[in-house]
Amino acid sequence: MTDSRLKANVTAMADVLLHRGPDDGGAWADASAGIALSQRRLAIIDCSPAGHQPMHSACGRYTITYNGEIYNYRDLATDLKSQGYSIEGGSDTAVLLAACAAWGVEKTLQKCIGMFVFALWDKNARTLTLARDRIGIKPLYWGQVGKTFLFGSQIKAIQAFSGWKGTVDRDALLSYMRHAYVPGPASIFGNIQKLQPGHMVIIPSDGEPREICYWDLRQHAASGAVDPFGGSYEEALRHMTSLLRDAVSKRMLADVPLGAFLSGGVDSSLVTALMQDQCDTSVRSFSIGFQDPGYDESHYAARVAAHLGTNHTELTVAPDQVRDLIPNIPLWYDEPFADSSQLPTLILSQLTRQHVTVALSGDGGDEVFAGYNRYVWAEKFPRSFGRMPRCARRILACLMQSVSPGVMNKIGGALSFSGQLGDKVHKLASVLDVDDVDMLYHRLVSQWQNPSDIVSGAHETNSLLSDDTVRNDRPDTVGRMQMLDMLTYLPDDILTKVDRASMAFSLEARVPLLDHRVVEFAWTLPREYLLQGNVGKRMLRDILYRHVPKEMIERPKMGFGVPLDAWLRGPLREWAEALLSETRLKDDGYLNPEPIRSAWNRHLTGTRNEAYALWTVLMFQSWLDHNRAVL
Image 1 (cartoon, helix red, strand yellow):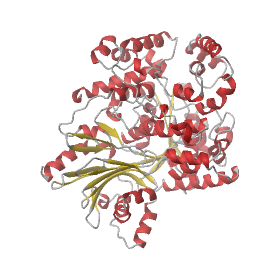
Image 2 (cartoon, one colour):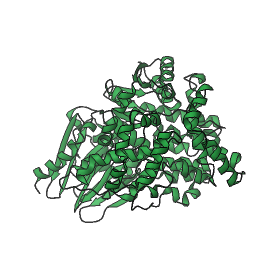
Image 3 (cartoon, one colour):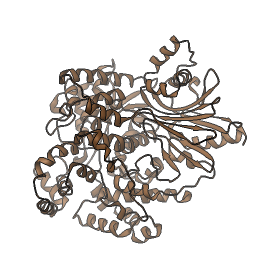
Image 4 (cartoon, one colour):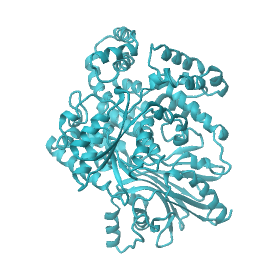
């Protein structure tokens, strides 16, 4: 195949990712080696043509295509220049390329602070190396069509390759039905997989790919349990404050306008406060509100913004605006993805991109600093219910579920209860019969408790949830839950949601709470430094309260959701009924209609809130409609 033909192929692949990089594009090929690389650029640092990619090293040996940000690239450049290496241009891409040429890929990865994926071609060794950042902030998919090795930031780039054909991996579909996302390294297609966080893969021109883990979160979690931080809480607080200030400062580096997502919760308020504290001008902050007061946090965000003195922009969203996004979800997410907070995240990203190109986000705080309610449940469950006979717990669960969630929500509203009381009571009832905390966690993270009943011809694969060695890494239950969340839910749900939603509008989202130095130190902290009584994120709160009064923040956790249960019974009912019809489910041949139709009927009658389980089916069915041509 000629250079021009190879370039045409990879250009077509890159062009479907125009939304990820509208500012520039490029392609390079070497037909003699059978290699071609392409890239779409969202220009953030050194927006000049000097940052054009694919980029070649000064020595001519290496060619790189790269997505992300290396926040300490100036420090790396200083080190390289002191050792006599030259760097062409002022972009972090040029520094990364020079570092790989000088120090090798793995040593360079150990030095980098950032979010990134890249592909590096070594002309002399005739190897292609792919690498992904430690936490999995940026995505990378790879697979083969015949003898051709393909990769891209999203699956749609691989699908654009001439001759590509996909087959739904039914085992991956089963995992999706449990989690509402496809856990890595699998993808929904059997011939495509995700490169895992903290990994690199080396593909020789004449051999099998070799995958290497260069940073292991499990190892850091395990070593933190064995050798915890020995200082006082005040000492730990000082060190964490220093790390977080530096993490935020590094992520404020940009040659384009930047701002912050601000919900008024602990995580986003802390990130915004640390930005404003290190900025001479008012930080741009952004939030959205909802007409339904049960889901609206905008007034909290406005109070925090006013106190910090940010230049705040708020949009109140009508339900129709959010619901209108639903048909396009498969276009943005490529795989079935059923975290319904994707909807407000898309709206917030669209709003923010009208004003800035980069936004700092508070994502990761719950996983790193023990903020989820399930961590509190793990502490309280054995004390509250552990001594109660299982049969008694089942009876109690039946009593709790005898009143519909809707009725309980109305009672909660009359009693000024913050949040959806009925959903919380029914969720607690659903786990009362578990025998241990690990089973509790498994139940809480499952949308369908028996997904093998839902997916035809599939088997549940071994995963971290069934891995007995996880208990050896973290004997403490809260730490074990955090580790599992950071290895699965964080990269495959939270970070996927934010990446696709922000990139849909060419907005770069940065997550300072997931700086790997912050993560590594957090794993050494005693549990009581993170979780105190019924309150998580103790350390983040104490840092935040130096900037924002406590009474502005302290309230029950709401999340970033939409009234999905009511929408499915109301304005989305006709759309959902069409996707969930028994005839259609049978004809498609992937899902068993009986349990799905039963859940749909329970939801419509209001006896149970089955919205989140049903949303997994609806998002798969919608995805299927968009992908029939390639299946």
